[in-house]
Image (cartoon, rainbow, N blue to C red; front, side, top):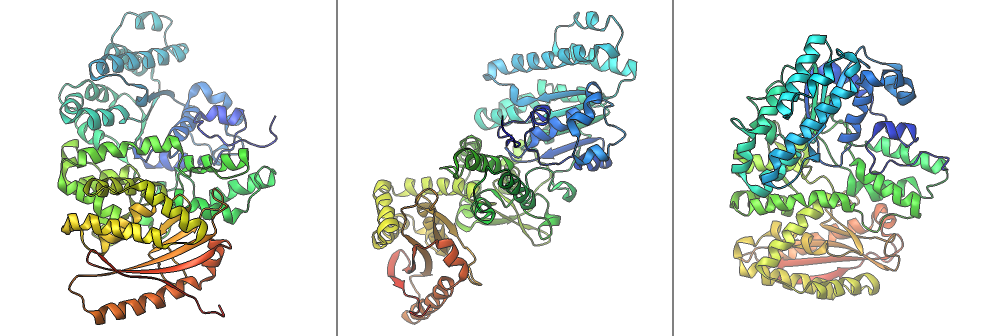
Length: 579
């Protein structure tokens, strides 16, 4: 039996985590903040961000049936020393709409069956608080609607306090919207739609409600049926409630180091995880003050691999999360019906950011609006707050994990314009990584850029060159390809940092500086630009940080100058001999 607390990778049952002594990041102080805010709350966070575990903790905290287990389950946590008056005071109804599936023809029946089961189990669990004939009377009803009405009325008659917790409130409605279209979705959420009807029954029958999901779209469409929730999604007080701060990640690392099961340097682990899993900010009020948040599923995935196998995972992106992000493909398919929204994705992929204002809510009918599409990407975790301009905010790609999804989209777009042989490019990457022969790699990409952009002259330009390079360089698995990395008081265009954990045979690393000229630019401007590029890249290469990140590999400084579609000049720049 392990003498240390195992990581709860993939486990979201709070009681199991506590009784089986798994590691837990203490988020219990937020219970008090939630109670102080409002009785009916609504929160949106991206998938795999710890929503289910947090809601599970609330269930055990508030459940009257778990009142006597409070000290056992919460011992050592913040809330154990600061319990609220509401602890153990409610009969808790927990609903997880991700459990409902099936075809469109089956959906109504499956939904009714799930709700019937949940309310019947609720009645049985708390039967002791009701008259003796409570369950006998319940059995007279067969539809979910009638059972819900009976349970709610009985609770009111007995003066029982009810707490409703809804996880993944929008799971199957988002699936219907993305896969089946707006007409079927509209029928579910408007007028006498069955989903709308159940939310009407929630209102007025619970003392407290907390709902979580990944999009505000469904709630907005249900507004007149359920219009009492206070959204805390972008409330600065709850920015750190889900996910891990860097401090929390470091505490976790140190715990496993001290337990003797994590044989790795703390800074090394943070350096590798941070570009991939960190970077989320959910409130524009704390862009400059709060730490950015890590995706907690990703952190446990990564550390679990190190603890179990003594090394980082072969793939930095958890396959389970990749499946979740694959839902972006549905958005992209929808997006291809509308050039404006497609333009939003292209701008983000090529620039790494976009300006806009995140809407608190919006109906599905407004998804064709590119501004609302930006908001949807924010809620899905594909964008995050990175800068504040007052009226608008800068929305940026939070990390490499998400960036990879955009680059895959961008790559498909370029391949549709002009397909190139990707296997040939992969061979060029191998030659550059193992033998330091970078010429085939650069020639291949820049020729592909020429062939692609000449097909469609509208995508000529510096921004599109950057996007093109991003898309194709990220096929290179030998490196952790990072655009605009800060190196020695400046930002290089691309830093190909060797991924020596997975590819220890890599002997060469690269800094790439791209310079773009329009077709009409003069030779004088070209020479001046080239001189500036040499000065910049030498400054990057002389930074102490570079020596650390290149890990003893031979560093190559490459400057490429492109004019219009054509490669004008590509050279390797040498550092001073005495450096």
